[in-house]
Length: 188
Length: 197
Image 1: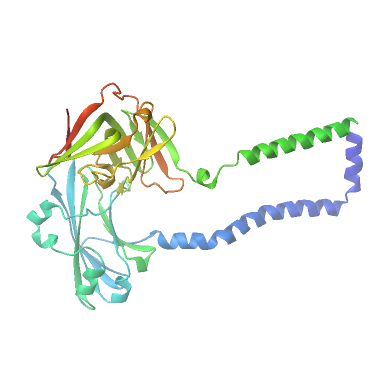
Image 2: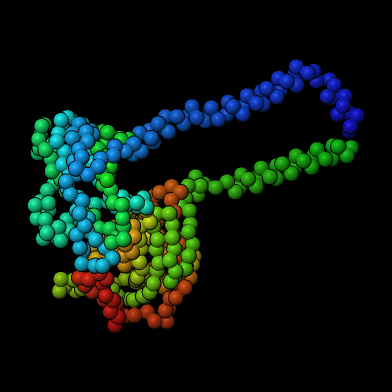
């Protein structure tokens, strides 16, 4: 066996041996590249619809995003009738510059906290909002209707409510307009 | 001679392995089926998206609902299984729309939609992170499929590789199937109250 192997090894020339290893090393590079090239479009599409590029906005500041000038006017906690949970009222406005960019699709509003938990808006305005801030309860929710009613150059005032645990801290409001993805607004 | 025998043995072995692989190839639906997260009645079961704990399970021949002063009666040719549970979202608000009762024979029964508008019914409750909510589930199941049943709950029925909680129902009063159970709507944090007859 040992003798036969030695004879075989001698029969294979040095250059052939090198070619063999070069090919094997080439495969190690070519395979990942092939996978990447094939899935590149999918990765790009996935990145495009995922919100990963925040536009930070501080309190009392306004920021240009998706064809409008956005500002958070209220982010307040209201009692919910239970010690464990609170109602969060978010009021924000957009001074519209490019109505076309805004009216495509619905905007997504999410409340986040320091732990990275995400709350979607309540379906119905909580009764406490109507009681304590009746003007906010009548504001439209973020979406095409609010923008169309305001028109170009107008200001759309919107409100959303959330139900979150009383212990949640570091609350921030995130607003995404589909046409501006992957950028999204983050009011801190 | 010996080499030839070895060669033939290798071919037969390879054929046997290939045959076994062919016979046991999983279907595409099996490959992308939900990832089970197993647990038991009475304990909290956590998945990446939500947590669920099943408490009391009630059996009845008839379910009555009382709401806005009106009583409705729901009969069944099997047995009503009413499960009281608590659920919570983990990271993001969600709704659990898929629940099934898997009987001992493996047959699955989906959630009854007959009084799905009652408050607290699982598919109607939006769950929030950090806020556990009481939820109620109802199934119509033949009597033979009760003992050794498992509750399967997932955010939706068609999420490839999503997580599915599988709760073994260990405390089932099989000798105590009530003739009727009434679900009464309350206004409080516990949206319903059960009354047995």
